[in-house]
Length: 139
Image (cartoon, rainbow, N blue to C red; front, side, top):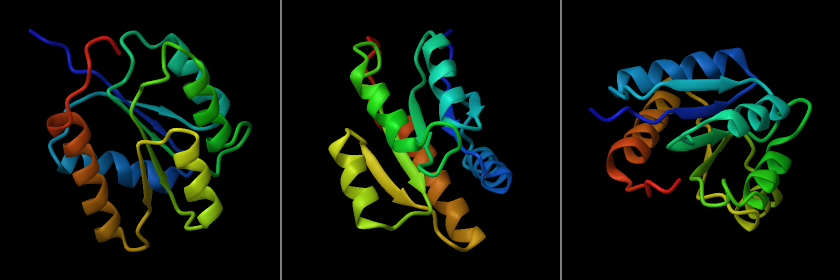
């Protein structure tokens, strides 16, 4: 029996955290979800995770260490440099989009404003990254 790899959700907003977790459940995503509430906690959790998560959903506007710095540090470490990372944020600033891709994000998704759109987007993201996308077992 294969153990499902986790999803690391890095989100400081409790409402967005709840909505994301609910959307993943609604999308029948059964992978365990580990939540970090700031950038520092995300880096600590990631350093202790074996195996690595199947994907990281990363907010940009985080306390302690911002999301771009989290992304930079993940990509600078050999063990995590190829880890799939989806920036899931409310920012539509061109600078944030550019910097995210420049630092190695696999995808940049702006959080939709409406609850229904947000739920649909997260369901689809969860389904893609856990069921459709192929991830190397070396990660």
